[in-house]
Image 1: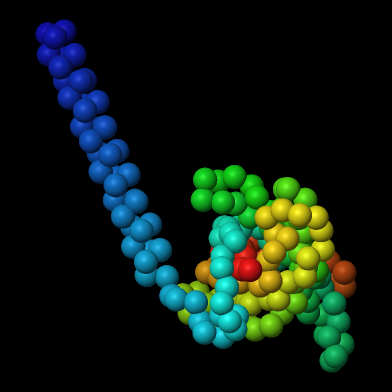
Image 2 (image 1 turned 120 degrees about the vertical axis):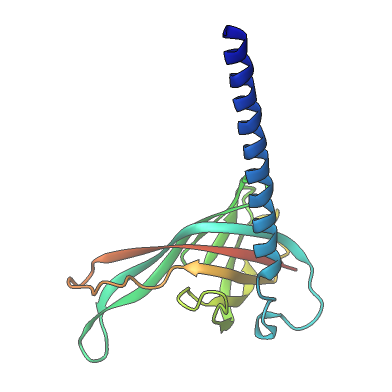
Length: 184
């Protein structure tokens, strides 16, 4: 009887391992399908001339909004700054993104950006827009020192908070995800 229990538990472990392997393979193929299904970069977000990608990083962060009065003296959410960490394909933190906008790599190189073009994300119409920015070197040598353009692509989330702001000066933070491509 003990032997049949052992064989039964071994069978359960094998079945569990197989199920886990199948689930992992399916998750991988779904992720690959999603990546392949992602819309191509809109032409308006392609810089003129030849460029080369220095890095393509995944961002996770927030878009910060402040409650201010508009021209009609109504309280409304106004964009203030991004705050995000950018990771490479292995999950290592590589760059921090902040106000300006600015990007600072952990190696000390730093750039600032200026908006050139924007486009809605066709895969997520409720997300903040995708962007093309020109960049200016603002720091030392390193990963970002030769970057001339930054693309913010595959945006999800980040829009102004849905609830109305009621106190002037209050802050709202909206989580967002995006891919940042640094081009030279």
